[in-house]
Image (cartoon, rainbow, N blue to C red):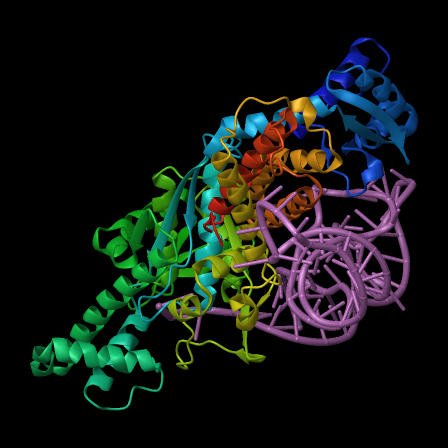
Length: 552
RNA sequence: GCGCUCGUAGCUCAGUUGGAUAGAGCAGUGGUCUUCUAAACCACCGGUCGCAGGUUCGAAUCCUGCCGGGCGCACCA
């Protein structure tokens, strides 16, 4: 019995009451009845508040409606008992055998257990990081590297067709400043005040100068361009490599320049013009974003004929839509939150529905603590802690897990000293340890010649076994919820909860025979439960891009 | 000034979208290993959910107003 099955049973009970004329439901029967796993043991294996929610609609006191449902439910197969509690909650206990089959279905699902087709048919574009290729990726990018990647994995698991995209901001003044900074450093001159000042700039300049002595012969303006282009190439390669090592991969690397070079910017603006919100004034080309509540109209082409950054963004959005994506999800840093509304308004100007076709998530600031001291990170000031440096300190698993553990919209403090500790105050080790323990039991079982296979689900009747089975049964809906809400941290929290449930089971229930003890059906049933738990932890960790070690 | 966002235990944070007595981890105190990984488990300690109103059977969650932190408001990128 999974929560989904129970939810369906409750809905059927409700329909039966309506069909029998016992209840008059004003509207339709709600398609989904929410079933919860209660915190308190006294509240049963599962509970639901349908009676409370429908009482008004039905015109009966909640407890009375609950009692009617309880009578109906008690007869359903797999339901051991039902009671009405509090203001009108229904607390359900599930028969051990009905609960025990969950282990078998997890094993049958294997790697696919937890996946679903909840978002099937959706073509989602997921754009994240999109850094300037002017330096290493820093911690803010790192948060989205972990979280964005996990969102992608969770969306895929929920059945969506996801394209992960990195937009390369390789055009405009920042690039020129980057080139000028490199050139100046190579020539031994001070870097311009508004340029890039990190140590990496000097190292990069030195490396380029020594690999390309011919650059020194170029005229000044060409020399700056040469340094800019070579620096760009190297930084982009560097970023890709860092991300790959961090297990974050993109399907599409889209460059801002290419949007201009193959006239997609022109095309995009043309499309926006057709949509009717583009106009000329004061020698510039504008988009009338105020039509949709923006506080001022936005310039697309400046008086001097240059496209604005907003023009590229608009064209890029149009391009994504023409490639068939909806929604287009943008994962942005907190310093871009002023941009959220502008993107939504842009979608509206393109004739789209901002609530359906575009979605912007903001990642709040990451503060990093080291030795109790806060490090402020700024590329331009040169105090950088790059993705690679942090990974070197923490390892990929610990960092990915830590960053995936919190919702993006809450500010996050990462204490390097805590994340690097391989101790129990680091949740990733807690979950991984559970997986290693499970693997160990399975190894020992194999040594004893006990195979995971047929077993009697009814034997999984211990309190701890029930808890664990209910936890395992939850994975699919946790994944769906994480996908729908774009909140992979729910998977992490679920894994911690499930690992804890397993550890408690392990403490109370001996899985393998001791000494010369004979192998019983209880051993076999528990072994199946252990194998199923391992699958669930491994699948969940995979969705966060974290490894599931067999030994620790 | 306008706008966005956050405020929950000593610390770091959850809170199933309005449900039952607000939960974890860490820190603190005290227990549990002769056999499957003690990187574990159990118990105790810890709260005016920033403040004040409102909405209703019911609010940490929704609405309003304050207080406090962070951030953004370009023909910059």
